[in-house]
Length: 366
Image 1 (cartoon, helix red, strand yellow):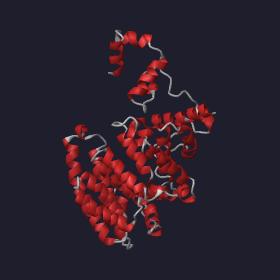
Image 2: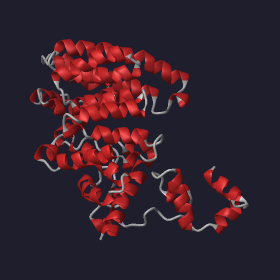
Image 3: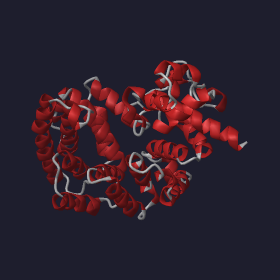
Image 4: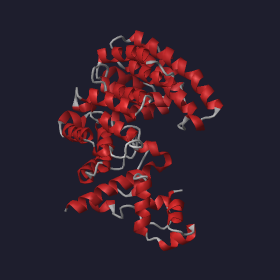
């Protein structure tokens, strides 16, 4: 539509406009419409933006990129792989051994629960074994029902979600809530099922008071719980980008480990505010993330890859692409997770474009 409008402004037909306009002008118009779109994906014959060979900068070729990596943490990948094959023992060992390491537990439960949404057989076999791991089983079960609810609903917006999908969603989501409350009783010190309830709150549209009660319980168990904060940010996004940013700024003031929330909020608000990536608080958050990733705790933690993804995405959008290149080099073939998964089938194309933009910024800096 934007191109047709431009053709009309010039007094040209659509065909004449395309024939008379050079590639540079078309690329500029594409970027004006949506900076995240690769012109080569939009208009056949246009060069990729930017036309940089990422391999020359120590990055893997595009055909090697993956969006289906289970987890950057090998022990979690091993447990999930075993669970999918019907063996619950590695999952039991992982959750028992890591109990009290709430970041590891959140990542493990999240990954294992996704398999439950597809096939509960291994979880029920674990339950039937009578190992005394009820609190672990309950946490995975609750999150698995949550995964199932969202899977049945699909990823489309409300307008493109069918009545059948919505009905399945609203039937399963209360089951996830009930399972999460049960899990909180089995392990009263564990923040993990409270994180599940934070996400349930978004799906069931808890009012602020009801959500606040859940949120306080989570914070009482782990004030800096990353996964809980991430899902809480999504809850507040339902009240507008400004409210989400306000939440992010307050949370990130407590620790640089939560600075990623500000980048998520910026991504959420970029459609309403074209200058969001130039805001001082966004640049301060990027500085905080780079500093955090330079510390032993930040660079080796279970959430390090997620922080690298968000930092790389934010740096490129904020015009600091050269600083993102080392992050893309560390990510390697891993194009999974947010923010890339928001593009669905185009995740790899956009991951590749962002890393090429980081390369181009490095060239320009030299």
